[in-house]
Length: 335
Image 1 (cartoon, rainbow, N blue to C red):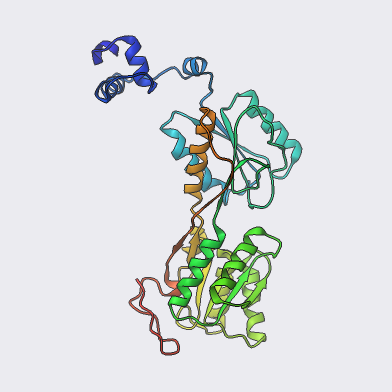
Image 2 (tube, helix red, strand yellow; image 1 turned 90 degrees about the vertical axis):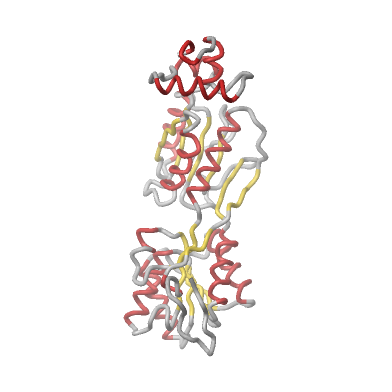
């Protein structure tokens, strides 16, 4: 391969490992020759030389995968071009199982660990502080002084409420999950800030059943909202079904917005659901980038980093239509 590229063996090795000083043309010529010859570097030898395993452990108690799977997809995207593999272990909420998997990762000499969970205000049931490898937390609570990545619930919720107000909605209700969740508190705070008051907030379970029940409560109490901002997509789907059963049109009479942008729910709701995407794949990419930097000994500032969410517009609040129906004399143009 070195002779094919017209360089020394030492230069070829440095080019393939992205080390050493040489022109970019030389580096690319060596890599092109390696590709043509089907050359694959010996990962074990590479690891011994650089004292790395080129493996990152992903530890999670989100065995259902709702949050961890998109995070893992992002991690893999960030690491695949670096020749780094991801070693996934699901620990449920079992401390003993967590310790077993953690020990297995350390035995495999992973270069670092990414901890991921199913809520941002709970730690995994295993102590990840003071480990001999760097740890990055993604969508779970980290230990003091750690690097932690979460979605910006306040920013995402604020965008949802702002969008509804821009459509002309004046009686916006918030139907959300359990009040004890940190994400619920952030989303509720953004809702109240957006409408400029306390508003109507109903707390319940993260379920379609609760969304259905919440609509029943609103109508029994004489509340007639023109928009309902929901704490997740499952609640929103229950809300849409309950409104339909009452002959209330979505979005002509009531606009509905969810949170999570879980495609299997948001895309299959009728009409399709406008929702706040937490950008978990992007969060995973950032986690992968940071754990790799730490593994390479680069400085990374500790603390909680909030990554922006994105509002995805669909038909449940007027998406894909020329205009919505007039509400109180206001006609809101939409894309």
